[in-house]
Structure formats: structure tokens, C-alpha cells
Image 1 (cartoon, rainbow, N blue to C red):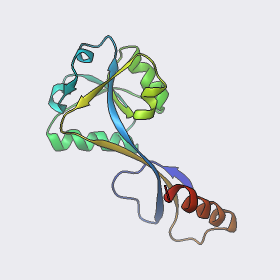
Image 2: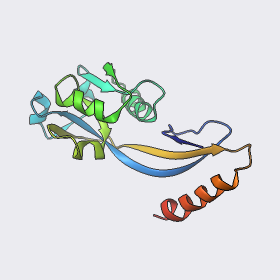
Image 3: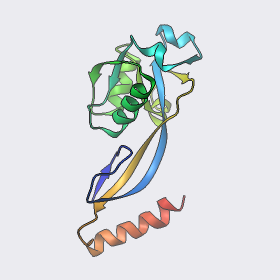
Image 4: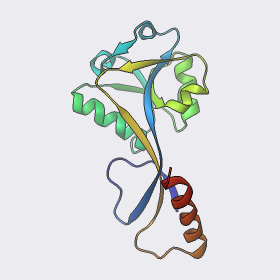
Length: 152
């Protein structure tokens, strides 16, 4: 089993149980010129340097698809493997980012902007093989997940 951040389609051979879905919000440093605006559209962000995750990460895929659908090019200046590191780099003015809403609550110095006409959501899944029978320990874990997470 593995914890996965999946794009819209899950890979072949994987069963995925959604554990949580959270909004991705646009954050800038409090000193960034965009912080004075309450609302932007994706086209307003075309020239901005982004802090983002490497290609293949689920949250990166969500943001890349949104910009592609809007026909807006964006520049990823810094890639990070960690949400807190991304938030810290934005706080220090090294770029802007779409981050899970929970990261904003625990990182002072970030300003959230409303992106008009765009709703981005990031999901976390528990992945297991669809081709192998789960062990009794994994089955017990999956039962707990079904009871406590899926029912929420």
C-alpha cells in the first residue's frame, strides 16, 4: 500500500481509496504586489515565477491542467518536494504558489488570493494493488479506512 496524490486517472493495477480532498489556494507573500488585490484570474499570473512541485506530483498536475485549459503559460522557477518548503519560499518572496489550504493556516506571512473562475482541488489516496490479494493486516487497515475515513 502507499499514500498517493493522484491526478484524475489512477494508474492501471491500482485500487485507490480517497482519504481527503482539499482546496488548493493561490498564495503570495504579504509584500507581493498581488497581495493588494482581492481577486485575480489565471491570465494575471502569466509572468509570475511559481514555486511548485516536480512534474508527476498530483498537485502539480492539477495546476498544470488548469493553466493549459485556460491557455495561459506559466513559469515554474523553483521546484520543491515539500509543502512547508514551498510555503516558506513564497513567504520569503521567491515566487507564488498554489498550496493546500491547510499549509496557509500554519504559515504566517502568506496572503491568499481568490482566483476568479477557477476551483482547484487536491486529493490524497490510499493505493493498493488491484491484482494481488491483500494480507490480513492490510485488510484490517482498509476496513478501518472504510469505517473512519470513507464514511466522513
